[in-house]
Length: 222
Image (cartoon, rainbow, N blue to C red; front, side, top):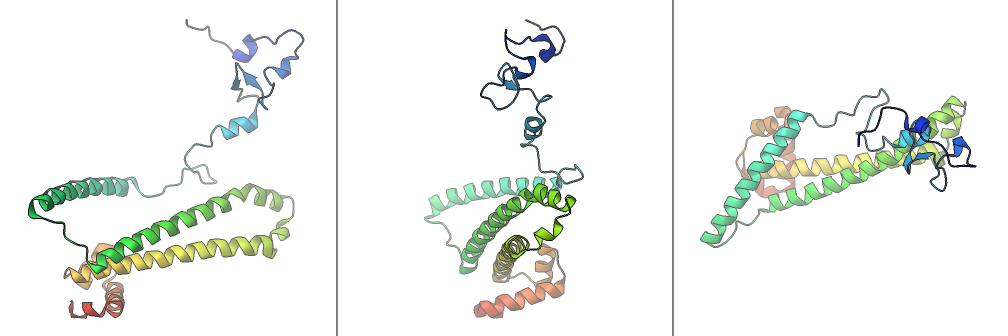
């Protein structure tokens, strides 16, 4: 049955003996209508209602993250890899075995896992850091910014974030170095490596030098 237009709160009357303002408060902890939160009468609940929205900047804009174009490319490549992997599994079944991973590919797999774990740790630390924003802003507006300048607060937060960022950067470098070793093992040049990573030939050459220092058997590559 179609309900006539109107304000539910205005249309619904309170039970006998119950003040209008206490409508359905009961044990919910907030003002409710027919068992649901009345967002207009409960600003705190209304704010919490948006907790599942995408992360937003202080300007109100949604945090960009990876570009849509890159996400589309990653999705396309993931589908291609799944197709190739399925084909290789079928070929291995008929030819009697799957190609073993090289030492550099194994290192790349371990390095990618370490990179992922470091990113998760940084994500958690940053989430905790972001959660302190409202309290920090309240303190500053109350003229208590100096209270942040104590080792137990400012110093601890700084070290936690810095350590997590350093851990991620170290893991990212390890992963890039492993991929460079894979590249050398497959005959790629410094120019090709630089193009693949999007950095200069000079930086690529330094990575090749570092990889050959870590894996001397690669010294015969280009």
